[in-house]
Length: 375
Image (cartoon, rainbow, N blue to C red):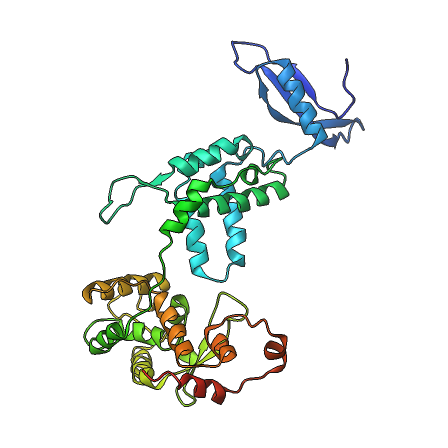
């Protein structure tokens, strides 16, 4: 039976033994011959198939739901590059970007697969068997399989990538959202999630004793007495520091957290002033610097995290960078700091409409509340 004009064609290619001899082509446009006045079809190949029945099914599927033939062969790796370029622009913190990148590293089994060929079992197998090979540390050269937390990040990344691909008709179904993480993985995630531990009074005293002896201990103390998120602290600019008014400006991640003012607690004022003078002397735009840094003197969260870990090892402490913020909030609550002012200082959203919309807190109020922290 003859097909209607413009509805594509199927034919068997001749010559040699072919595993998939049936070729399917569809019309993607028309070209006018100026001399004859006749139009010629521009055809593009959908694919090659083992039987005519498979070829017929492929053509029918395309005609029912046409897709961009230029993207039909796009691989997982190629789509990740396109999607991440678009998605990373929307992120407000480097840590969110790192979360995606770390999850992607475990997906090498999918890199060269076409997105249209990926099914649920491919994604599940990747999560179960995905691994990386560290090039340093105790696990150097060995396979490190995805932890439960990494598996959760992989699943979230798959969801977002397939959402993006489906919206652009690269795939005709979101297979990533067709399954859920298993109960055993969720249980393991809860076990792996480490409970935050605040710095004890004894540990803080030890930090003060070593503020001038161990590099970046002063920066840790600034985090404990300001409540900045580690990534916010590490990128404070000299222009963010008002020594006359004794306040710092900065913040990121959330609307409530951006461009907020944090009073400089009197205990860390000498530390801030010293860092400020050093930055001015070396001509740096940033408050915290590492003059011995091999990749520039300015700080980033990754640099700070590495130096934090070294300081903790030298002092025989077991903390991670975010626990300075937990310590500050705990100290503030114990000292009786006003709940709403505390939220403004640390950049938490305020749900009370009267407070968030109609109350305008003066800097002096923030300073007074900060002084409630005595030690």
